[in-house]
Image (cartoon, rainbow, N blue to C red; front, side, top):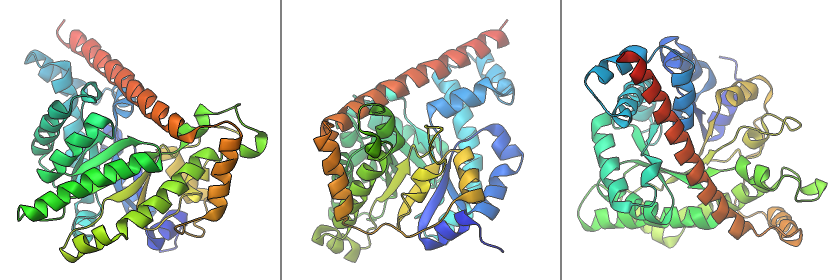
Amino acid sequence: MRLNPTNELYRAGQSLWLDNITRDLLTSGRLERYIANLSVTGLTSNPTIYDKAIEGSQAYDALINELAALQATNEDVFFEIALDDLRRAADLFTPVHARTSGVDGFVSLEVSPLLAHDAKATFTEAVRLHAKGDRPNLFIKIPGTTAGLSAIEHAIFAGVPVNVTLLFSADQYLAAANAYTRAIERRLDAGLDPYVASVASVFVSRWDGAIAGDVPSQLKLKLGLATARQTYATYRRFIHSDRWLRLLNEGARPQRLLWASTGTKDPSASDVMYVEGLAAAFTVNTMPEDTLLAFADHGRAGQMLAGNDPENDALLASFAEAGIDVGNLAQRLQVSGTQSFVKSWQSLLSRIDSKMATATR
C-alpha cells in the first residue's frame, strides 16, 4: 500500500482520531474506509457534533419517535442515539483495541456539561454511561475543572476509562495527570489492575482565536502551537519521572496526551497547521473530517516533537512581553469552554425536543 501522510504520521508514532460522528458516517462505509486507508484508530464526539448530526439528518427520527412514544426525556433520547452510534463505531475499532492491548481504538462520549461543577454527579453519570455503553473501548469525557478532577480520579479508580477534556495549558494538563496517577496508585494499593486507559485532551486552536488582533503580526497564530508544545514537554517529563517509572514496573501505563481543537479556523492559514505542528510520539490528534482529508491530501509528516524546546520557551516569553498572561488566559478559556459546551448541550436538547414534539402530534 502506498503511504499517504496520515499513514506516515501513524507509523511515526501518533494516533489519528476523527472528531466527528454521524449515522451516515457509519452506514455509508466511510469510517471503515478511513480506518483502512487513512490509519484512523479512534473517534471523538461532543454535543455540538451531535446537534449538527441530528439537525442535518432524518436518520435518527425513527428512534426519536419510538422513544417519544415511551415518554423518554430529551437527555435519555440523546444518550440512546449517541450510544447506538458509538457502539457501532467501537466495534469497528475493536481490532485496533485488541492489537494495541487496550491502548488505542477508542470512541468517546461526554457526560452532561451541566454537571461540570458537581463531582459526585459527574462520577455517578460516568459509571452509568460506561456500563450502559457496554464496550471496553468507550471513553467517558469529563472536563478538567476542579470538580471534574475529583470525578476523574474516582472514575479511574472505579475502572472507567476517561477522556479528560477542556484542558488548555501545561498546568491544567499536569493537574489531570496527577488525578489519573493518584487513581492508579490507589488501584495498586487495593490490589486492582493498574491499567485503566485515559487520555488528556489539550485544546489548541482556541488560543489563537482568543488573542486574534491583540498581538504583533509576527506572533499571529503561534500561541496555540506554543502552549501545546510546552504541554508536550511537561508530559514527557511527567511520564518519565521516578513516580511513573515505579508504576511502569508494576504494569501501569501512562495517560496519553491528546490534541483537540486542531481544525484551522483562520482561512488565511494552512488548513493542516495544527496537525503538522504537533506531530509527536505517544500522542493522539483528533481532527475534524475536513482536516483529516486535507492532511491526507497535502500534509507533511515531518520531524516529531522532542521534549524541551528552548526556542519555544523564548516564543512564549515573547507573548508575555506582548501583554498576554498565558496562565490567566488558560483559566478563562476553560471557563468559556465549559459555558460553550453548556450552550451546545442546550441547543442539542432543544433540537431533540422539537423532533419529539413533531413525533407526538
